[in-house]
Length: 449
Image (cartoon, rainbow, N blue to C red; front, side, top):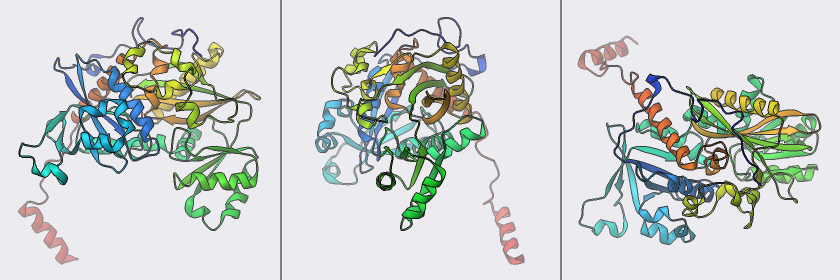
């Protein structure tokens, strides 16, 4: 359900997306095609969602400037590359796909990029006489959702091997993934959140009745139960009785060892805003209002990703031919109203709050921040932040005047600029503590002790 989108609320030079950057913040991009490692899959419940999002982004890359190199993280944690991984239809048979793909290991280099080296540790590959394949990666386009792909783990790996990557850093990724910590940080900066109780699995096991008492003492039904560090509405339930609460918490603990139980907003109106940028500049998108199916009290995984043909987003975005090559539409399959039908003052309030949260969480690249409005009181609440949003929120940027190919181009540019800034700082301290003289001092210290 798309409405004509305006540019209100967007800040920057006329006709441009980003505000004008000062000279020291501009990024010079080589005319040589950049090898973009498109990371997809992952050891997480959102594995298939990640495949869709990442292949959409790969299809949108300008082939005159970028060469997508798929890096598939299988459900068992093995890493692969190969042209077949760029075709969504191949993922219908994962065993056959892995047989056709090339297992790889990551090889750091001192040159600010990463090499993928063909892994020949087992199987028939040991009998191949040719040298192992080696592929250079200039920048990592991170398309993993949930798990170690979005919680700072993969971001830390990229920083360790010194390769540019497109997402928030380790801190922002870890903070954004944890719904409990996100709410606590927002409270500290006077961003409203609904009342909630956080439970650890060791606080729940064999003392369920006490934990249920704690929830009922702090909160009134109906309640919403969520895994604290999972996305795509996986493991979420709304409940109205103690028995249902018990069952929902048990189910949520299947996905995470920390669960959040929060007060449900009954007169709920969900509003989402994407933000693109980094610590220098950040710009909000137009707003969206997701539409749940008639039978669901909260948006479900099926609402977000498994709409039947004819769902609203199939008619929303421009440039569909490129995405069609990637197959399924991911988050674009969800029904939504874009832009959300809100007064201008409310729209600006949400956009400004989104940018404030973006900076507080030290985000970079593109994020989507989800808000809730209680229609009974008019109160606005922060719900959660997605530091690698489904489909990279392209469906919010196209009506904001930023086509998908420009969006991914911005992500790559931001990643490279942050990498340049990071490498411009002192990385080592040129004192060898293991030199003979220094070691003598260590020995002396030991003898004195």
